[in-house]
Image (cartoon, rainbow, N blue to C red; front, side, top):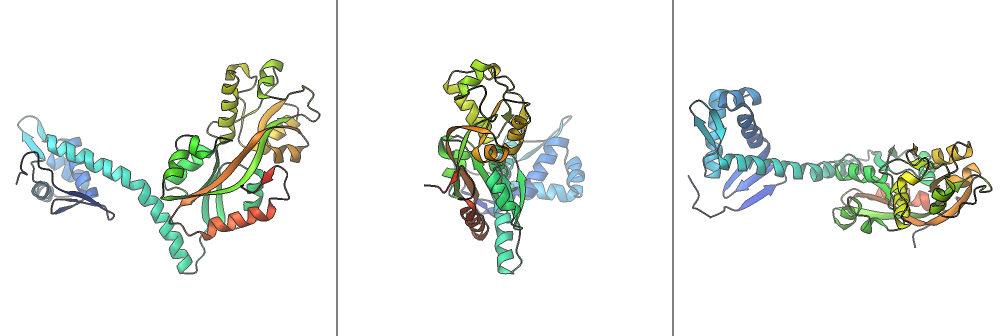
Amino acid sequence: MTAPPNELPEVELGLGGSLRIGRARIAVADALALLGAIAQTRSVQGAATEIGLSYRAAWERVRALEADVGHQLVRKTRGHGTTLTETGAALHDALAGAAESLALPLAREARAMQARLAVLLAAPRRLTLAASHDPLLMDVLGAWDGADLAVMGSRDAVVRLLDGRADAAGFHCGAIGPAAAGPPFSDLVADPAFRVLPLFEREQGLLVASGNPLRLSTPEDLRVTKARFVNRQKGSGTRAWFDRLLAETGTSPDEIVGYGLEEFTHQAVAAVIASGAADAGLGARAAAERFGLGFISVGWEVYCLAASASLPEEGLDRVQAMVAERIGEVPGYRLPG
């Protein structure tokens, strides 16, 4: 039953949740549940109760698994109950790692399959979109009944896509772009399992009171003048860009009055400034225009839309087409170069 020393059998993971070791094929979920229950209860009887088997059926499953693997996996010791052998513990950890690594891509592919079947059956399915806030995109999606939108920071939106909890993610990373922004953005761009579509470019800058009474011109002026700042929430692309701007000038966040005051949208930042409760914030030109504020540009960035490469392209293409139709109507936007 035992494999020759130092000789490793061929291992293959199946998409159906199975693991082939040599000639044996093991159901990952069943084997993981059995070994995990034995490790937790230190008893085959306890494990049987935990996973809903009879004591005899549990032992039969243990013996069958040992025969498949070719090693003893469980050891009974007087006074210490039943425990996993070193091989059993290693197999349990390997199965747990495989189950965890397979869960996210399988969840994403399940969403893509559902969308493809909906198209095949002529049953339109709404796109589940997690996206960083943007005034133009919010207007476009508000006029389209094809998507369920959850607004959040760029990082959270990308993580939700990677976790299989969204069909698509809208995100931006400032002027440096996703490839240079680090995980999870760089992971998304480098992974061929995803399609990343540059949706539009937008101009970001300091939103200030009308007439710019404090004569602000750079982020460093916020520290010098003690201007009251209103920030975006942690995890947002705009917040990350502002932090990079501070780092470039050697300015500590503690030197910015109001750095800890957070709002979740560009409009909310603009509204706080327009009300007189703050002097400045970082945001899109469109928000400044909407609230009659002054605007000091700090640069242009690309806003991207990403989805699983296997997701039907109709949904993303529809969003792209609607944005292209509106791009010339709103200041501070342009199509990707």
